[in-house]
Image (cartoon, rainbow, N blue to C red; front, side, top):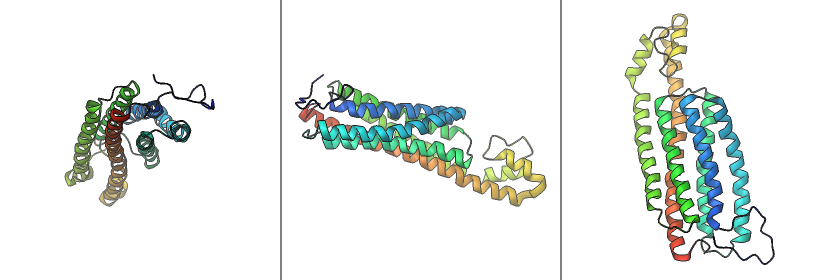
Length: 252
């Protein structure tokens, strides 16, 4: 790995010697965050949600440190702006992942198949990003396959998002909720709550609770869709940085 000249001796023992290692360390946190998100969305694991929150805070601190190293150690590199954008693009993914878990807890939204699928695709896209920057750190600039995988993840996430919205606003599901008997509708939205309250409050309360739940789930779907969009943006940044690396080399 190419060494950077450091005449003032300011580089610490843990600082990277390759500009792409700055992005790689940010990618490591994004991988951990999306792994935890996927666990939370598939199993409802409270510890996984807490871990996402912790990683989100760590990512902000790491971004600050990495950007400081970028300014101090790579100020003359023509890759500096691209790496700056890359770091920020990855932290933005973590931001939306963290927001998702926080608001699922705050709004008391339970897991479902669509959320689980979106989490898995976001995780896959972030893994492709990490792989791409790992290639760049090793001096390999052909990352087209990794970039395409991020785009594919976003496309598939978009299809699932639209499918989830269609199902969420399906009036037939509402009719089913109105007619549901106790314990029959637990797997749908707030079915258990609706069933338990049916005898006391009737159709009006069922309708109100059902509509409120639509808005709650719509909010979570929007956050996951935004996270997938940020994966696409980060993939495009990876492409741009790789083009620059072909021109200037890993150190610029």
